[in-house]
Length: 574
Image (cartoon, rainbow, N blue to C red):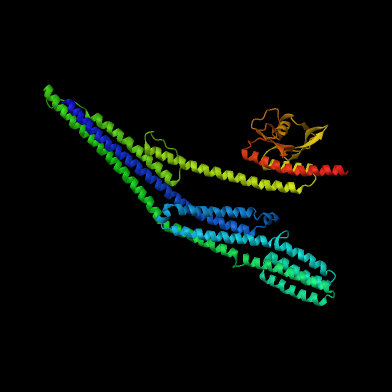
């Protein structure tokens, strides 16, 4: 009989355990799915805010391009800092808008068509900006485009009318009005230039006695007028200082994009709030249901034990002939344990609510720990870790892009230095090493150039730099001697992150400091070593710094090859 009672208890306990496990699994999966939905809603809302801020940045970058004074490099390469900044801002808007279109909530919140319209507007915006860029390049400056052509025609015209004071005076007046127009882009001044140019040509025809010179002046005037008309029509098409033109078209499209952004925010604002409220209510409901379910199961367990133990008590009383005062089980201990379990469950549930609320509000720095068997708790921790990793990844990519952009600008900057020096290796070497020290935030550096001495190749220090001081030291190193000579032999870059105490001392006003890292890079091209660059710093160089020095060393090698060949030719001539 007692064995049958215990078997019955086991069966009922297993049934209750299965019910409990199924309920917990359902609750975990349901809350997990709602947390994922909340994360997507939060991402959608953040991207809406990002779209609005990105549009503001795009307007700023367009205005900066409009006011930017472009150098000749811009007209040769079709890009400069202002165009790069503009395209960065444009593609940021484009990518955010595309990401918003991909969200399932775009259709749910009835804003998908707005983002689709934004995509068409952005395509039109890009086409108009490309045309604006093309027109700007065609107009050019004194060294490029129609303005350069106009300057050349002016020189020819001045040369042909210099014998006639009256014609020279007339054209000087036209030239002044033209210069004023290029500064102000006033259409009245442009029309005045064309009108006066027509009078100038008529006067030149009537006063010139030489038919050949007359025809030449007519041709030059026609060429001047055509070039100026091209400049005038292109500026008119740009609409830089007027309300009609490409600039105004871009501003109009930007305004439409801003309106759409505001509209999308207004349309989705209420549904997003409702989803947040719904999530909160459902979470509260599931917590209440979970608590009630646990209480119900505990109550069933209590009833099972009480009923079955009562049967054992009755059976025991019969066996022992005891009366009602016989007690088999103390239920006060059982209820105390149940009370403690419920308190722990409530604390764990509140902890999860706080964790979910922190994630919903964007607070990912606060750390939570749950039992290793707590599936929901681990899911929350994993979600927090994933969001944190994504943020770190984005920050790392941003830092990498900043370094790469800096190094691209550095290569262009040092390229200008290399082109600027012709024939003077010493001044070239010093300017290169002084600029390189500042660019890499280093302290000491030197450039060694390969020379022949006693039928041996040596490395001669042409320039060194330390703490803004120019130190020209007569120092010669044979190939294979020390780290610098070994670098020349191996034709490979040395990077040392632990420099010996006796290798080098960086002298400053505060005493002596041992450098932390050292780069020694060969200046070579086509396996011929033209020299070696040596740079030391108290900071730790990174792999981007090493790559930059290697790329720069190759450019220096080509320049040194050219300068050394010039010196050799001069020596042979002498």
